[in-house]
Image (cartoon, rainbow, N blue to C red):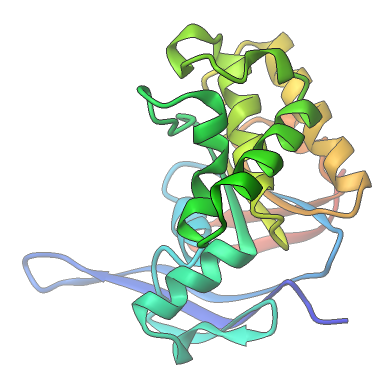
Length: 229
C-alpha cells in the first residue's frame, strides 16, 4: 500500500532581503501511512507551519524528496500540482476560510467546482457531508450566521467534499473554546476511525492527545516521532 506522505531528507531555506539564507527545516524524514492520525507539535519557530505548507504542497522544499500519495511533487508544474492538491488533500484552517457571501452548501462544494464536477453532483456531495457534520438544517445559511464551532464543522465538510486521501488541519481549534474544541476533535476521531488519514498541527497537548502518533519539532528538526504519550 502506497504511503500517503513520504518525505526524505527534506530541507527548507528562506533567503532574506539582505541575501542571508536561513535554514528552517533540516533533513526531515517523515512517513505517514494510510489511516494514520498524526499530531505535529513544536514551539513557535520550530518549523511546524513551514512543514505543514510543504505537506500541503503550498510551498516546495529547497532540497529532498517528497512523495504525496506516491507522486513526486518535484515533477509537477504549478498547475499540475494544484490539480494534485485538489484531488488528494482536504484542508482545515484555524480561520475557517469560508466565503462570507456564499451559502453553506456553496462553500462546501467549492473544491468540487475547481475539480470540474457538475453542479448537481457538487450539491449532492455538499449536502451529504453537511449531514455528516450534523448541520443539514443550515444549508442555506451564510457563514456569518453560524457560531465558530459551526463554521469549523462546515470547513471540515468542505475538506471532505473532494473525498481526499489526506486531511491537513492547521490549528483547527485555535479560535474555539474548550467545549467546542472537544466536539471538533470528536469529529476528527470519528473520521479517522472511518479510515481517513489526518495530519494535525497544534500547540495544545490536550488536542494532540486525540491523535495516535506524535511528531515533535525543535529548531527545524524532528526530535520525537512515535506513539502519543
